[in-house]
Amino acid sequence: MRLWARSGGFEESAGQETGQEKGQEYHRNPQVQTEQVKVEMDKARLTREEGHGSGQGSYGYESVAVHGRAWILDFIGYGCGMSIATRTGDGGTTGLMYGRRVRKDSPRVEAYGEVDELNACLGLARAHASGEVRGNLETVQKALVGLMGELAVSPEDLARYESDGYARLKEEDLAFLDGQIEFLESRAPKAKGWSMPGGSAVGAALDLARTVCRRSERAVWRLGEEEGKVRSLIPKYLNRLSDLLWLLEQSVEVGLPSKPKPKKS
Image (cartoon, one colour):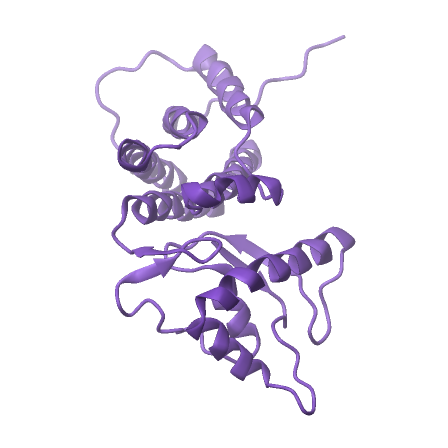
C-alpha cells in the first residue's frame, strides 16, 4: 500500500542520527520496521483527521494509492531524503503491511497487484468520463482502497489491521453496486450479439476495466484457495463490479441515464 506523507519522515537535529541514517537502519532491521510502522501511520492518520499536513516533519495524506511493490515506510524513507528506489525488492521479495516479506509472485501480491491495475484502469475511465458516470467511478475507486489494503495484509496480521481501524470494504459498498445495476438494467435495451469495444474513449476504458476486474476476481479466488481467510465480500464485490462496468459502458455508448431520477413527492 502506498501512502504518501508530505515532507514527513525522521526529523534531523544536532547530535542525532540524520533522517537518511535512520531510514537506512529501517531498511536493514526488520524489527525497526515492525515497531515503526504503526507510529508513522498513526501520525499520518492523526494529521489527516485534524486537517494538518504542512511544515517540516509533519505528516499528511497527499494521495492514497495501492502499489504492488511497496509498503508505507518505503516511502516515508523517501520523504527524508532517501531515493524511491529502496533496492529492498531486488531479491524478488516485497513487504506486506506490518513488514512481513513475501515473494513478488506470491498469490497475495498477485491479487492486490491485479486490483491495483484495475484501479488504474478505472482512473483512466474516470478521466474520460463526465457527470454521474465519473462520480460512480470515483466511489468505486475509494472502495477499492480498503479492499486492496486488506489484501495487502498477511492473515497473521489481519486482526491487528482491523483493530488499528484501517479502511475495509463494507457491505454498503456492495449495496451501492447492486443499486446501480438494478437501475441501469431496468433501462438498458436487450443485448443483441457481441458488443464491440471502442465506440468512445470512455466506453473503451470501461471495457478494459471490466476485463481487468474479472482477472482480479480470479486472482482473489486463487488467493483464497491457497491461503484462505479472504472475506467472501471481496470476490462478491469484484464479481458485481464487472457487471456494473459492462452496464456503464452500455450506458455511455447508447446514452442511457446513469443515475435514478428522484421520486416526486
